[in-house]
Image 1 (tube, rainbow, N blue to C red):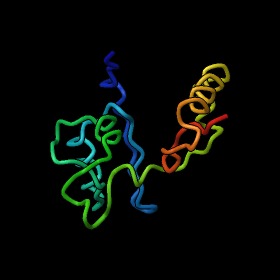
Image 2: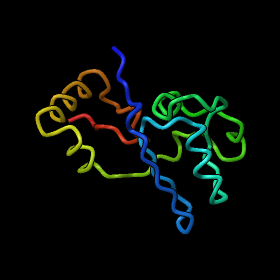
Image 3: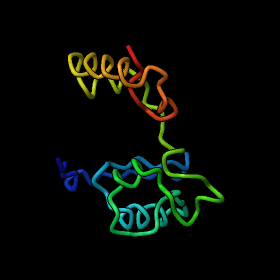
Length: 117
């Protein structure tokens, strides 16, 4: 299955807080263009045509990783309630049941995921 995220192109850079909020359909080149205007750098990949969602799911290996880390290290904490709202109650509970069965130790707990329920 392929999910087309190309219409999700929103980006908001905050030079005061030195943060960036970007939607999943953004390409790395588009992200860099916006952030460089504010003197910001996002630890990200090598190829400007890479989609942000795929880059992040892959960890975000790139030129600045030795100094700044990986893309996945910098996901902001939206909180569990926001994650729950995004999925809706029925889907969230089903995903919790799957996590309980297949990932009871919550291996990916450092990023924003669904804890085993």
